Image: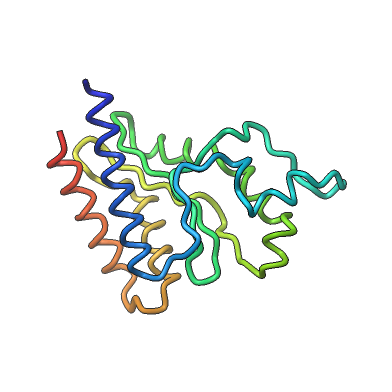
Length: 170
């Protein structure tokens, strides 16, 4: 029962995040797609040259990946019963090898995409409070969008939306 409630909260926060990104011009959005199906990784993972990065666990599927103003971002959402700070680090570390592979990807190089420095992990506790690192990630994400004048205000807006979702979902 508890895990079903947590999953429902996660899905609602993820949907809110995706809608906000699309409203603000994000493109090429994929959700819950295994890494082995990512077009951005296809050339680097099939390339046998010495400078290619080998990905392990290609079945992993980050919650959301999209292009925001020519920057490829990966977003993981978690509503956790555990310490939000610890969970944040776990989520960021889980996909760090993907960023190494993206940096080597011929597809990314050919299209001229920039790649975010790491996973943007949106980690909320059971009360809907974002950990500090997630707040910073939201601010950085909002900062990529040219129409957003105040990334701090946008970060606060999203934080409040997420808090309301978590507190109202049961």
